[in-house]
Image (cartoon, rainbow, N blue to C red; front, side, top):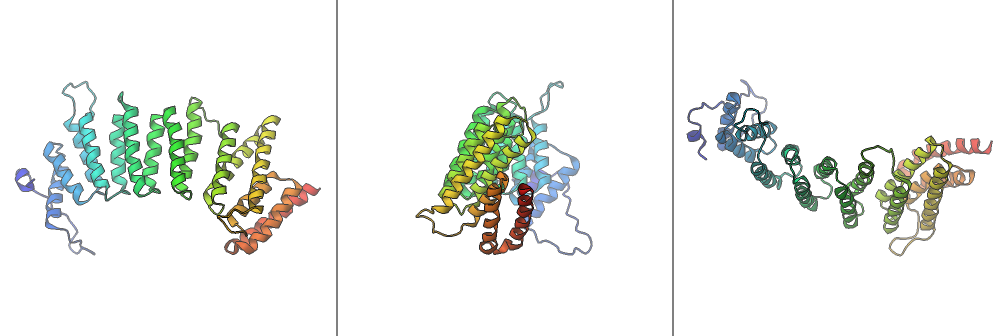
Length: 354
């Protein structure tokens, strides 16, 4: 597009850097020309096809231009406004799908661009109001999967994925997301983003399954399933911090909950699960596999200490104290931390002995 010819009726507005700019940026002539006319269009608030086309040119120069993306959406709405004065202004499906493809092309070299992801969300909010919302969501999840294939810890992609599933809020998507996070964990067991996604899918999926009622925790049956899943992940690689933190999170959540409740049955079940996990971890500690050498594993020992302290009886606290002494040596970076933890356990032991 020959910009001066297309906008021959508009005077371009140059960028004002002041009389003595501290650090003048040397733009290309094409960049300067496009943005000079964009400033003029913004001042006139012209929401036309040619203004929309100009945003395309400017965004190719700078995909992070928030003002340009915002004006582009305003143009889209204006160009699709129904002629009926009572009808609500929106953007038609064909325009949205075309613009999602445009954002996809720009996103190829800008996978962590905030503006691109927000633009996709703004357009999808409209598409999700239609009858094909689940199909649209599944297509967008496929797009996110493609991005995660290049960078499996892309925060923007994982956040966008959570927004899609939470917005659609259908049981089939929640269940599928648990399986999806599992597939990502299998590809890279140290992918903390995938473990976080599993936590999201299991917890918020449980809320969705209970008609939006926030239970504050997983059901015991689901917690038991997730605890066993984490232990299996730790058995694959005991030096991997991810499954240990996931296990601690699941068990601590259950323990905190039963402390607030009066149900003896629930408390017995949670304590049983806690002790069962402790037994499995002890067995791992005493029986190293061929894949990993014998000797101290700080991640395993740290998780075991947390759980022994949670069990809270005299024998468990003694074991935790002794293992903290080992961690003082094996985990020198956190030596002072383990000394502090030891002093806390000694106080607990005094109370238990009384």
